[in-house]
Length: 242
Image (cartoon, rainbow, N blue to C red; front, side, top):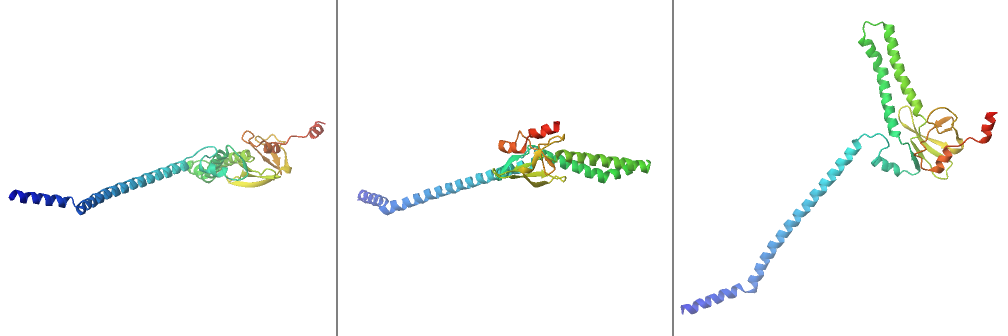
């Protein structure tokens, strides 16, 4: 009897374990545990992607700031050069435009310092010197500084820093540099261009009484260069020889 009762008990337990509700409940528990683990892994993966993207963005901004703060001599590369290339009609850039501007700013700075501080230093450093002699020394310092600045301005005045021209147009626009190292736009007509009859260095042509210089090696538009460098006519040369 006891043996029979034990067999009935084992069969009833086995039937309960194999019932659909128990299997379905276990499956739900297992499926819930799998979904939770997958959701956590996906969240961690998205967070890693966001962190990597932010680090890459920060590195790009730092590199851009470093390039902007870097001082270079010669034509600028990078952002400013890319912006200039997008300008319509620009066919020529002065290859040493940035160098001329830096040298001119340095010359202006030294001239201002000499004019303002030269007399003060002269009168304070030599108290026993004659006043007339002090004035002569101070005047010499001011004259020397001003003369070198004026000579530099005279030397680089004809230099064309940028030239804009639309093919077929009878005029073009140039950017020149003033004595304060600022760019001044000017419009020149091809009909006003004349050969530069002068011994002044670095002069390509003359227009409206002013001299202009274009670096022929960096002017790649041959049609424009031919119009900017007119040749003397044979009749004028023969007349001058008489």
